[in-house]
Image 1 (cartoon, rainbow, N blue to C red):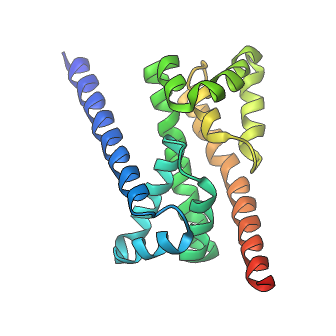
Image 2 (cartoon, helix red, strand yellow):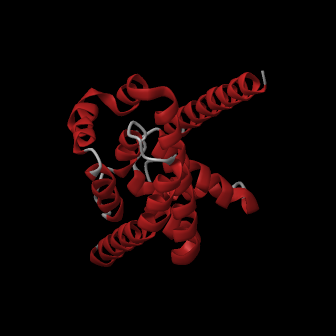
Length: 197
């Protein structure tokens, strides 16, 4: 009986969370929040002290529902909050979103993953499951690389026998380097563009 209540509560939280994310994405697209770091900063400035929490939520959303450009989020974090806190907020949001994507994949299985990442991406990356035990190593290497489609791979990882503990360790240890390189590279490109123009 207790397990049934817990499962119902988790399912309800998942549904409410997904509904909230869908609403926020619709709101963000409708109000053009994700087209530039300036529009995202203007939106976050309205929330004062709660801006970091909201930014972390945005980063979670862009991992769980991979239709938002992650590059804007990473660059926005560094430009809005500075290199140190921008990195921290990017890391926390992306790590939490990655774990949530993994858990959703574990819970809802292949049909859910197929729907979320789309048929083209599903067919492209589902072959990773054929790697068997080698998948864990390949996944860990991909998470370390800043150009890997790690949001999609988090969903694929949820379809394997990988434990939550192992997945979380890979994310927590692998993500800092890739987020740092990604943020540094994007910031460098933006500075170069400003300098040239």
